[in-house]
Length: 154
Image (cartoon, rainbow, N blue to C red; front, side, top):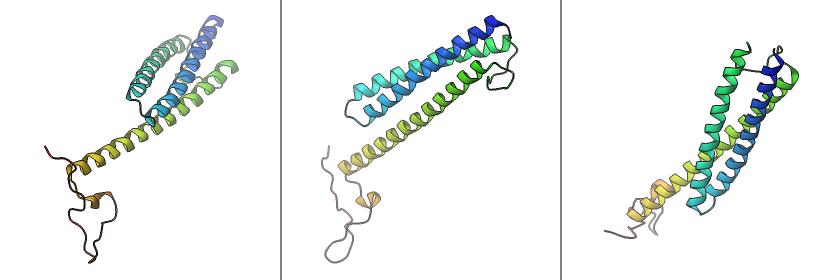
């Protein structure tokens, strides 16, 4: 491989690694915001995450183009690339895998929060509590059909 191309690939991988580290940090901050009480913090972290993902996509396109020009495949983990490139590639893949896992956790938090909000809205509207857990029984052993009544009506 031409020395200049190798150096450019190393620089690109270093940039991708830095962007992935920033993304990992942003995902952790997003998780904290999702479990907090500030919608603005969630919006800010989400916008930052999208910006970093766009940066990573641009760097990835550039890396693929440069790899193709140098006669390498999409993966730099092969035995035919220099150890510094392979090491950087592995480090990047580990960071990306961590980001993927963190993003899945954040998605789960969003899902749980949405479910909680739906439950609360149903309670406010007077939905039956049976869908939220075991039925509520009265003194005669019968379930209450309207154990919860609407908290407000329009």
